[in-house]
Amino acid sequence: MTVTDTPASPIVSASPLPDRLADQLKQALGPKGWSQDTDELAPHITDWRGRYQGSTPILLKPATTEEVATCVRLCHEAGVAITPQGGNTSLCGAATPQGEVLLTLKRMTAIREVDIDNDSMTVEAGCVLENLQTLAADNGRLFPLSLGSQGSAMIGGLISTNAGGVHVLRYGMTRELVLGLEAVLPDGTVWSGLTGLRKDNTGYDLKQLLIGAEGTLGIITAATLKLFPRPARMEVAFCGLRSVEDAVSFLGMAKQASGGSVTAFEIMPALALEFVLSLIPGARDPLAGKHAWYVVCEMSFGRTDGARDTMEAALASAFDDDLVQDAAIAENESQAADFWRLRETIAEAERSQGRALKHDVSIPVSKMAAFIAAADARVAELMPNGIPIAFGHVGDGNVHYNVIALDDEARHTMIEQASTISGAVYDTVDSFGGSISAEHGIGVLKRAELAGRKPVDVAVMRAIKTALDPKGIMNPRVLL
Image (cartoon, rainbow, N blue to C red; front, side, top):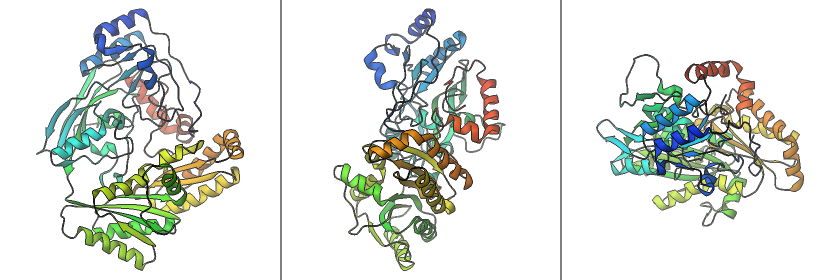
């Protein structure tokens, strides 16, 4: 459950930083490698949504893997907890310290290697995603991870949370884009698993333990990432539809008609589009009429010829089957960006409405429409004046199911019934064989929900955590 404009209370505060440890850390990092300045610490101790407000005795800013290892080793010896932080775009409170030492990777931005023949690049954890997309493009390749916070999110944090984004349909989650990792383990040992190999059958795939572990098993310092051929042509359509059922049917038709060239397929309800059009400067509806639901469909092709014809043929079939009521195909890159902006600014526009309960869940694609209908019914029972807004990634079943309150009565109900409402949403997710966390992770936000719903899974994860981090110093409040 997330209430966007209400800070959460701190959960656990770590012990005060011993003077000896503080001196050792400062000496190891030098004057540029640490800070206790209130103004510099301020943006690091609150999260993007403003929900979590934290504190830290010191901000560590190592510039190399060796410096990270030294910091972790010293903290391990002293039994002092560490919160790792990348771009601080976490939506679940995973990167906000509550008294722990805060270690940021923002100075680790080196590009260690770009291997075009191997379709890979090795980069440090502090590299911003958008810069990596540009680096890949400059080398004639594509790094397909793409999401709203890409201008500030860092690759180490994205790997630690197994980020999703709009291209999961074609390229998979972050864990499918990682060939190798380098990480500092909880005792300060450097594990060097950087490799460009697609095949390596030498036992446990250790990198997969760190991907999605949210910093609880170590600190990722570098990664070798997969690159892909750049599409020769991309077609983007903005479509109006009557229902989620029609959107799911259109998705299947589009994949079939394009030979699997659909790279993204996003859905939004009319109210979400209304918020964007009224609150985001320059936003414009590409369609003349009003529709209950809207879809952004993107196809990518290895050749320029026939690309437009393929998109038009898919839409023609959808029109013939009465699945799509109206559509516009982007005429150029600028117009395609405008279409995408309507989808990508939903969170920003919704945020300006005030209080909301946010749920990042996944459902089998075939059951998405039924889930939304069932969740809407449960929310209506508990909060008749609440307004559900479901949007997200139809192609991979990821629904951002949010409930907003637009008046004082609804806000009061939301405050009083927040846990009950979110619990009902998650119960509905379970009934459809879904997951309570699709792409944002668990963090602090969903820790209790995870423990209650998947006790065996959590017990196994705790056993792994205890084996690797017996002192429990790595992001101790998060995930488990």
